Image 1 (cartoon, rainbow, N blue to C red):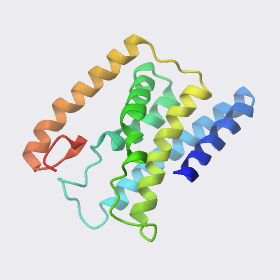
Image 2 (image 1 turned 90 degrees about the horizontal axis):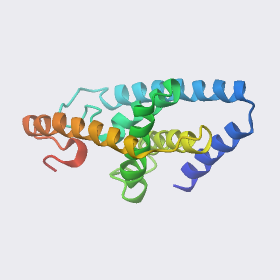
Image 3 (image 1 turned 120 degrees about the horizontal axis):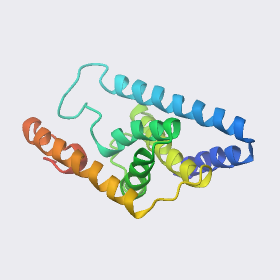
Length: 170
């Protein structure tokens, strides 16, 4: 967790020290890296076979791993709001109570921490570098996106016997 925090802080301090064109290039580079990482991680996770009950990237943190770079790359407010609220209300929970069953000798351990750190880094970047400040209507947007997520995930959890969003069958 300390290493993750140092990497996030390093990214933010570096970005804040750059002139606007260099900061924009760093942000685009980080956003593209995050998308590539998200795709590679999901391909690696399902490299042997896809188990629909556990292998789809449908947990909030998985989806937030895709929302994060899109927010950084597009600047769309609803994506930024979703990133903010999902990260600070939900993704940070992974640092408090990680759902890891593998130790540092396993790639699963490192993929877990990297994926969650990328999301947190993106949200902190939005706040500390880009100056995003959520408003009440942003909370409303995040509620709508979250309600749509739950409406889609509950039937899928029931159909698959899955636990996506940690609201299904554990």
